[in-house]
Image 1 (cartoon, rainbow, N blue to C red):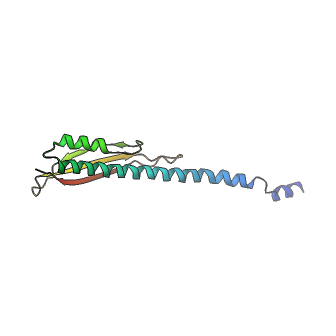
Image 2 (cartoon, one colour):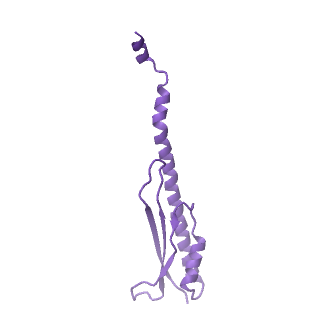
Image 3 (cartoon, one colour):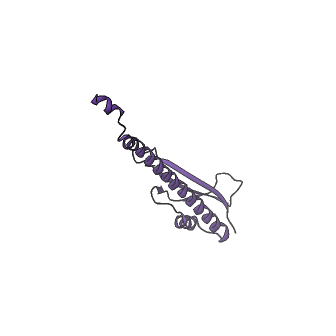
Length: 132
């Protein structure tokens, strides 16, 4: 008789359901935050490339080091991952001898509270024509 009444008792069922659902919900919310961090870094890389391209086209004969410094100063993000040092290279083709390829990379290992995802590396490149 007592066992039957214990089986029908639903006291604490909500607490058990919450204990099962909360870790999953927290993991999803934190995952959304991690994706936002990656998107912010992507926007920061695009901004740095734009600033580097603007510097290369507006100022007469800028050195590659000046362009790299400008891009390093303009990159932004949440500082959870790491930005590589921007690079400036001359394209291998002979079609454009007054061009430069600007490149920025960002690497982060997303943390989803209960496990780490594989590292994510974003690389952005922009070709710019130098002014004379």
